[in-house]
Length: 225
Ligand code: ADP
Ligand code: ADP
Image (tube, rainbow, N blue to C red):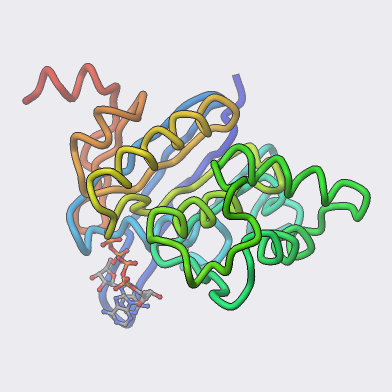
């Protein structure tokens, strides 16, 4: 079966330093793929390339049959992306911000309200939709970040360190939200937290010094430990 996303021989340099070194992998429909590695391993650089926000120096990314580098607009419609530090507009309300995101994602005018309402509901934001983002807790701000990543119903949702900087209760809530998201989207989850991968993912890839070291099921990973 055709993979939903296929990354082939991705490399990215910063100056002479290689941040991502010849990385290839696929993700299939319904999968939750963990991208595990320590700080500086190359996770964010890979996520930025997959989301179309950073050009690779080498390699190819095919999403739903569309080449991301050749047809970025078309390919990006299939991808949702939560950066490690999402650019939230703190002076907008949740609903205003998501309205802005709906427009950015070129959702048809007549479908925007339904898309916004659905994202608000799915991310547990109903009671805060008219509050300013800047006045929300970090946990709720992260829900807004996830809402903007799913608003256009992408096939693949890329989450970069989605629980970083949250307290234990917020972490539990965001992990539950990720489980809910995974029922309707394929997910790529970047994290340095092994238990997070064990809790949420079907398969894990370990990245170290820019290179993939391991690519197998969570069960296979657990047997190695
Ligand atoms: P991770 O997300 O796993 O922590 P990153 O992808 O952020 O790793 O970083 C991989 C390597 O690339 C690190 O050595 C980092 O310092 C470097 N790097 C990342 N982004 C840049 C950048 N914009 N300019 C220079 N170096 C960068
Ligand atoms: P990450 O999100 O990859 O873990 P940061 O939060 O430190 O890393 O990165 C925030 C921004 O700084 C990103 O745009 C990243 O590319 C850039 N960056 C990261 N490391 C470096 C570096 N060594 N030199 C310059 N820019 C960097």
